[in-house]
Image (cartoon, rainbow, N blue to C red; front, side, top):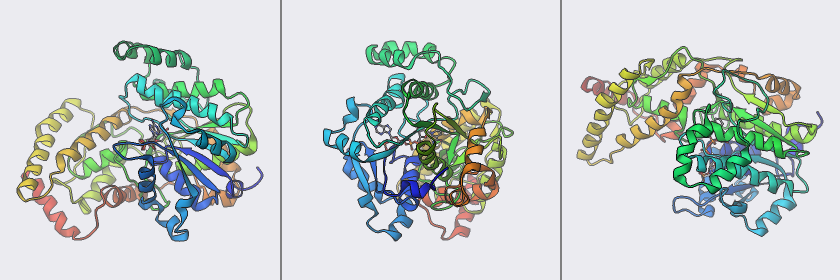
Length: 467
Ligand SMILES: NC(=O)c1ccc[n+]([C@@H]2O[C@H](COP(=O)([O-])OP(=O)(O)OC[C@H]3O[C@@H](n4cnc5c(N)ncnc54)[C@H](OP(=O)(O)O)[C@@H]3O)[C@@H](O)[C@H]2O)c1
């Protein structure tokens, strides 16, 4: 393949959706740090009383950009805001913004989605399917477009044990479902949802599958590809080992366990935890933006970016390293020794959650209130339960994924690109990775320091005797 990845991106402009999200932020950082792009257009919506401008400014303040900022304090000038709401007609973009994108953009990376498994069908289809349709139609009007990378999920066919790297035709045509969600009442859709999405277990995977087929149907001579990550976890190496700034899925469960708020976690310890580091996901995405432009594939290639079949780690191993780390280095917000048990017994899990965990956080919040501090444990428990509930599907099921496209793609990269855009999952040492993941949860997600650790350990032990 001609030209290396940074040479390709040099002076090109990228349009990125989902830049305020976990993966999108990582892609943005890497594009700015390693690709010499002319600029990155980021689509950001207004949310929770903040305008998109305010949200873009907040995004730039994220610690993830510390290295980029050190090299170029004016890095923000390379990030151009496109204010929009992807579920609105024409995504709410102004004519000026659309014109600017048409003039400038060569590569589109579509990462925005709702990752909520229990989203109403209408909302899941609006953001995960209709928004993609709008993105495809808009991108087709870009004269300079060279590639379009769509982020899907490895679990698009999760009702089957094996997932090949091909797009599978869903039971319903995406346009039929789009028409339905636009026409039917909320109540009618609620009634229809289980039947429509069967055999998919949730609206997330169902809508992501429809989206893939839609891309397949609309692709014709459109230069695009699909990247399907498994469960995305903290960064393995870049920009910092263990970087994570949210409590989604695995990270939410881990923070809950670390705080002594979740015990046990429901799942099978022998099942493979198909986790992939976020920096490796960003690297393969950026590399695919380049290779799609260079190779111009005739059909839409699919890349299952998973770890299980190449370098497996189990939830039992997760449990071991998590417990070991947080008993040595407790969270400030802890309610006792970390003693996660990945349990197969649902009754025991529910009993302990209602009988012990919920009572415990109420008592601890009361104690915090009495000592004049802000109560936070009920809130943390809620967040951790949300993460654990999402993760439960993955701690109780195991899949096998074909990964030949990812492996042969990696082998085709030149030595320099392999080093700078590494996505070789076989190189991940899970013990090291999990130790840094735990450290990252404490340092970046919980924003805690590492002072007075021995004191915190004593307190943790004392709490354990109390509860
Ligand atoms: N996280 C995982 O474990 C995982 C696993 C497999 C696949 N994926 C896929 O990876 C991609 C990125 O996921 P993530 O973990 O980064 O998710 P995330 O942290 O929840 O980020 C989602 C992004 O989408 C944006 N978005 C959602 N609805 C929008 C709307 N209506 N208009 C404009 N922007 C909207 C969000 O913007 P706001 O900040 O405004 O909400 C946010 O930037 C998704 O396509 C997801 O399906 C994720």
